[in-house]
Length: 276
Image (cartoon, rainbow, N blue to C red; front, side, top):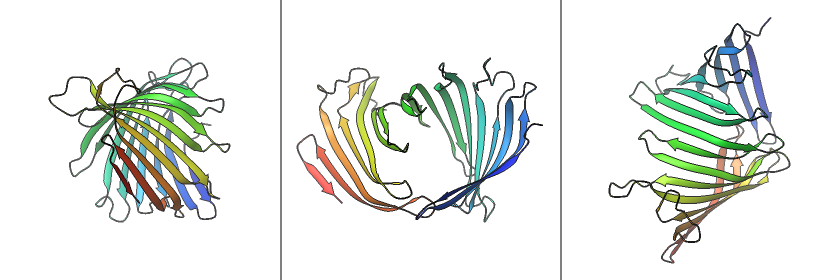
C-alpha cells in the first residue's frame, strides 16, 4: 500500500508567465520501518525544452535517519543532458553528498554539510563543499539568517553571514544583508588575511505575476584584514558600488528577458565611475 511512483505537473500562469515543470518519480524504495531510502526522477521544464534531468536519491536505511525519523544524510546524483542529441551538446553529472543534518526542537534544519562533485565526459571534475549552520526562522518557517562556509574547487574558503532577511506580505524575499570574507590569494599575504565585503540587496515593485521588477544592491568593499579583526568603523573603505536595476522583464518561462541597469562606483581615492 506504499506509493511506488507518480507524475506531477506544475503550471505557473499569469499575465506573461506560462511555465510548466513535469516530474516523474519511480523506483521508490522504503526501509523495513517504512522510511524513504531511494527513488529516481525524470524532470522536464518548458523553460529549457531541450534539456532533461534524471536524478537518483538514496540514503542508508540505518544511518540516514535519527531516532525521531529525521533525515541525517543522503546522496543525490543529477544528470543533465540535451534531448536533441542525447548528450552531445550537454552532459553534466552532479553528485551531492549531504551529511550531519541537525535540527532544533521545532524540527527546523540548523546544520548541514554538503560536498558536491561535478563531472562531464569532456574532463570536468570539480569538488566543492558547503557547511551551513545557525539557521534561524520566523513564525512562518521562513529562513531569516545563517552562517555559511564554502570551499571552491581549488580549496579556497569563503565565509558568509546572512542576516536582516525580510519578506513582504505575500512571502516574497525583499531584503537581505550579507557579510562576506573572501580569501586573499597572495603568496606573500599572512595566513588568515581576508577581503571583507558587506552586501545589501533589496527587491520591490512586483508585477501582476508576483515577479520583482526592481532591485537595488549596494556593496561595500573594505581593505584586507585578518579574519576576526574586522571593525567597520576602523577598517578603510576601498570601494562602494551601487547597482540599480529597473524595468526588469520576464519571458513566459519566468526567466529574465531584460532590464535597465545603473551602476555607481565610488573609490577610496575619491574618484567615481557612473555607467548605465
